[in-house]
Length: 289
Ligand SMILES: [Zn+2]
Image (cartoon, rainbow, N blue to C red; front, side, top):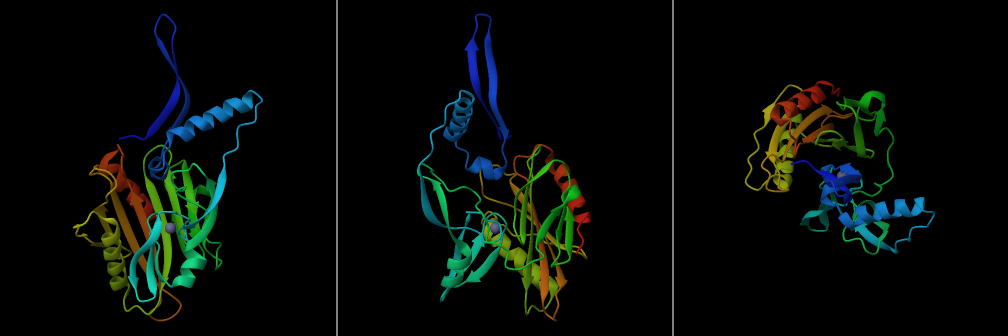
């Protein structure tokens, strides 16, 4: 299934029906989940009004307090588990997870934003938390994504790509011509015994949160990373899958580690598994950690 939206006018001129496209867009997952045809029609209307020299009507706004991922700004975020005074906060877009107390939730996960009064849903992304540390992700020329603090780099293959968001430790890219999404995330861990145990535990946790219930992850081990893939519940399409690579390297002190999570999502892609495997291979061959 392609997510291509076209809106336009049709006219019967005596000889046939003529269709004229005035709006056309290829949607990525974050767009189509929140797709609103009324908004598309309004955007078109406002464009025409401006052309006619008329000021478009201003929407009514109000302030709301929301939960959003501090790393990537996704509003698909919230508490997935509670224990004593702590909540385990999780992001559905970049996968960032942490235990947080009320103060940390207030400071890091809550935000006040202005939205339109007639908005049925929150925007998929708002501004993430301003960086607390320097040396986070930077997107350089040629699709090279660098994380200086972790000493990490990866090249996002294919052109053109667009960064949906790019926070300190999380970056999400969407394909323009084909339906792929790539998420790269860095997280630090302390007091862990081995890199392999850490990677396995994180993979199992991601599968528990994101896969169709009952999925048992097959974990493939490579000297540089652990990999798994699993179907996830979005629609009935069995091809909506995520591939996850977790790479771990030692941190500054013994039992400290930095982990890199690379996720490739490929729902609704017509190229089939070969194209996905080729994309994953190219992506991971470029990783330096
Ligand atoms: Zn996030």
